[in-house]
Image 1: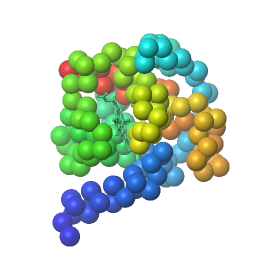
Image 2: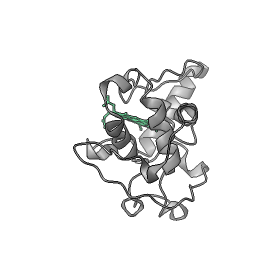
Image 3: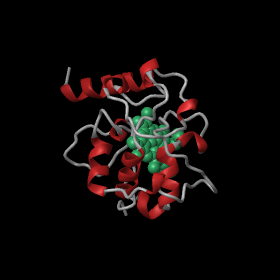
Image 4: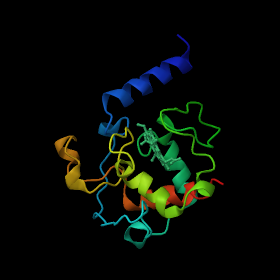
Length: 159
Ligand code: HEC
């Protein structure tokens, strides 16, 4: 079989097998940082998590990293050096002109606020709501507050 097709199929399978979890979640070390409370209003989280400042360069790396954001498994992104881009979710090019930073932040933190049936993992949902994860991952979030802010810093630049 063609390599690209094999990679496509295995990523798709991994997504289907764990709809609430990023692909290969078990292989990553859970972030060990205190959880930062957040509040959503009008489908947006206006305040950066923990008052942190994001770094767009790091955000781009996280989006393409299979063991962290793995956004590429489901979204087409302006990361041309990566060959596989999934299409379960909408392409994210131009998201920075369509949506505010606050709204983008809520999408990444907890997409279920927009769509309770979503297949997109809640990357910074309150830890007690994660009840389908392995015991060693309980009480943690998929990404750290800093990683969320790095992603948001990059996504807002996609104009
Ligand atoms: C398992 C698949 C999957 C993964 C992984 C995933 N998403 Fe999504 N995402 C979706 C789907 C599907 C939607 C469309 C809305 C829905 O069905 O919830 C979406 C919607 C979005 C939206 C809103 C787009 C719009 O036009 O309103 C943003 C922003 C987003 N995702 C960012 C990300 C980022 C950043 C990552 C990586 C940290 C990521 N997603 C990882 C599936 C995924």
